[in-house]
Length: 199
Picture (cartoon, rainbow, N blue to C red):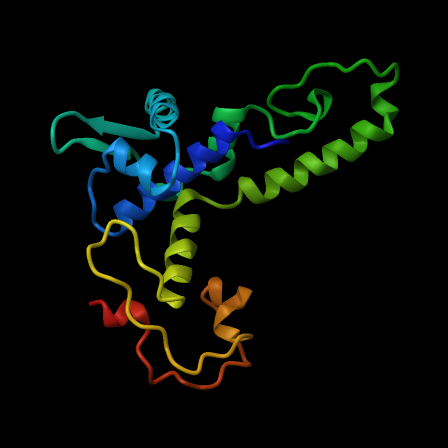
């Protein structure tokens, strides 16, 4: 599988629309979406048209119009989006479940390359079909808040970073991103998280 520029831009646009929805911004103008992601406007317009035709986004015209996610973000698997824009996940067609075509190998059933590529396809599919757009948006926002990064679609600057933060802080680890408190955390549970501070 190779994620094309079109596929990359489509995923970035969907993630940005998901972030906007999570932060209470109903509609995002295509120009803002393209500019905030440093993407070519005309290319983003074509991608959004394809996503709209497939039912993933909807649009509202007019001065205050724009695009928004058309269905629940937790119903949209990342693998669906990749397949829509870029086609099969398998590196070769004879290993694909969705776009299978016979290869030139004389003994496909015993082809070592095909067997290897089936495993590659399965590994990619396991990840992309396990996680939803909602999962990606939640983890992205959580990481931005942890790092006190400026949230998109908000007029307020990010709060100042916590002084004395360790470089290898357990709060920056993988378990933290999944919402699991590490046994190595330094016990500062009395502090408010950036989510609580913003309320």
